[in-house]
Image (cartoon, rainbow, N blue to C red; front, side, top):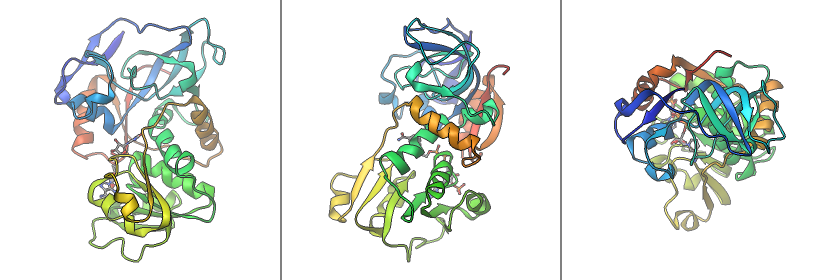
Length: 311
Ligand SMILES: NC(=O)c1ccc[n+]([C@@H]2O[C@H](COP(=O)([O-])OP(=O)(O)OC[C@H]3O[C@@H](n4cnc5c(N)ncnc54)[C@H](OP(=O)(O)O)[C@@H]3O)[C@@H](O)[C@H]2O)c1
């Protein structure tokens, strides 16, 4: 099969389109014929070597941790799927391999894809959708009537977090540049703050939850907006030890675990029209290196999806 493989850490040119063996299918794995795979910032961080620790296996590897496709085969213990099912998944980090014509994934990490959107849109959801779900719901524990501040609302993760929080009935304050304002408003944000302006957080206080997808100075500026004892959930950079306690609040850094059960919940929201997946650019699998270049140069706002095969 054709796949994008990484032989050594480095620039986007390190991604090579190659003919590789089909993945091995374990007893509880499904073999998915990939139709679309999306590109995440962590793909670039792994490719460059900045986050090679997350890989947990030696090179060469097939890159990619988001896919939508069709089930072609399965191991003998699989009970939840049949050949021909249209599915989507975020496979665990130790395996991955979605920039490829086929990927083998443990069935518990797979769900039927949302029926109402194309494969490219479904492929844009698994990793960032599950991260947003974890940040807002599982770890964040946000409830109706509470106030959440979501940093990076125009990003793939943040845009889903805004929609989940709005759907829960929370008051949503979102940070984004002025260019992204209309988009974020259409997703349900109640207040949008332009992070490029100095003191953009002035006047924000007594927030019940901060979802920080940025880190650094953004995270540091966020401790004072929380009400005492409230929580900051970080996805990009772990909070410095002791920093939350010093501010009289709590902090959590999440590393999203794959979960087919969460993907089922996300598919229900999409099919009910309550969650809109967003794709900024669609490209061919062979253009994976260019996709990484565009993402790293921030020349594309939102998700890049690679077309791998026919639906
Ligand atoms: N821990 C986990 O499990 C997990 C899972 C998924 C992702 N992540 C991480 O979470 C982060 C976000 O991922 P993503 O896929 O959403 O990234 P993304 O789509 O690349 O986010 C880009 C967006 O960030 C916004 N942005 C940049 N600087 C900002 C700032 N200072 N304040 C507010 N917004 C700012 C920009 O908004 P404008 O267009 O408005 O300028 C841009 O559209 C990444 O670091 C990723 O690796 C972690």
